[in-house]
Image (cartoon, rainbow, N blue to C red; front, side, top):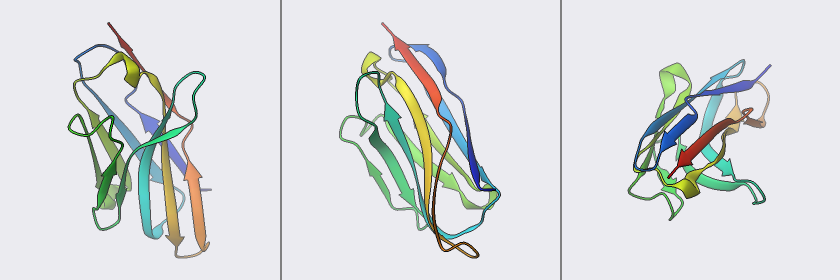
Length: 120
């Protein structure tokens, strides 16, 4: 069964850094885009950053210059390096993978979420 397992969340003071990791298992994508989304209390889930199989990245304007997304295709893992964190970055962060698989056609998978709390 395909699943994404996130790690690396926690609590940090403003200006600090955290690195999130998300490892995929149970499925092999032929080509996919992996991304990080976040949802703050009372707000809709929003895209933070994404990276394609070829390494093309996109970022929300609010995190450009502070966050960096990367992936290790051999390890089926995507990372989100978060620097200069702000209180408004506080949210539950979700990993996402969508794309074409070798055996199951198109597939979209979500992780269970990891909480990030940034205090003043």
